[in-house]
Image (cartoon, rainbow over all chains, first blue to last red; front, side):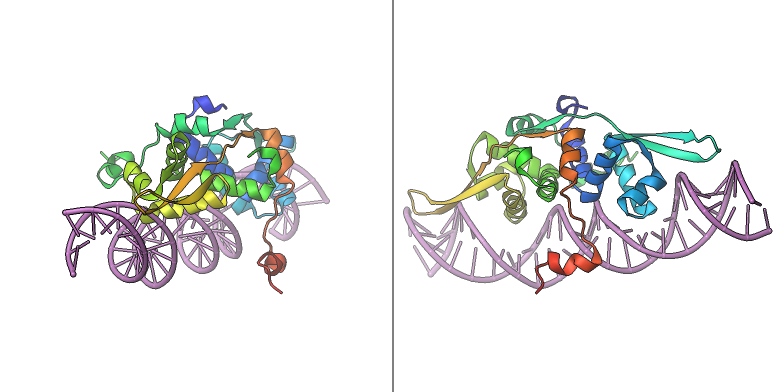
Length: 116
Length: 116
DNA sequence: TGCTCCTGCCAAAAAAAGTTAGCAGGTGCC
DNA sequence: GGCACCTGCTAACTTTTTTTGGCAGGAGCA
């Protein structure tokens, strides 16, 4: 994933996903080695429920991806791995992307939420 | 500002400062041209109070800096400008920085808050 | 059957962030 | 004095995010 592929809104989402100590550690762990949820939770010493929330946020931002696999002994394992990314953030790149940022206002809130 | 100058905790703070549409627009505006608070608020069409909160967050993350100046006609103007930064975020750089991230646990929470 | 491992989801509480409105101060100018 | 511009602050509210705990399902193995 590259900066130039993103809109301003997507960048905001990616940065929000990165701006949490747990999630940075998750990315680091998964970047070193693909892993499944329960083991990852044990290694990072956080609860499974909490890890799942963070993983969901990272995945929806496009920073990690998951595959549901069945191990040899028949257990379902959800493996996560990192999506390679290179975000070169500079004042200049922010200028370029800021133009495509939408700020929710009251009168367009309905449309933004997919109202019909 | 460069990635290699930061600790994991500082990176978290910087990313948190960047992960807001208003603040990205503020950075873009100030990177184009240094500006003072009231005018910046008018240009971005947000309230002064709101802008000040966002500016404070950006400044404490080290992304912008401010100078209090007195204009020719005697008015106090607080000028903000962007601090040049280059953050090259990749899985590899996250791995390196994640090791220096501290997670607040109950028994060390007191020390982290500067208790004596 | 009972135990262990894997998965998922949801409700509720706690903590943090975002936002508004109103107050204060200062200057210069008609 | 009154108006327009600049600055700062804080209390209170709303919204979002983070975190915990519990519940349920599936599979293999003794």
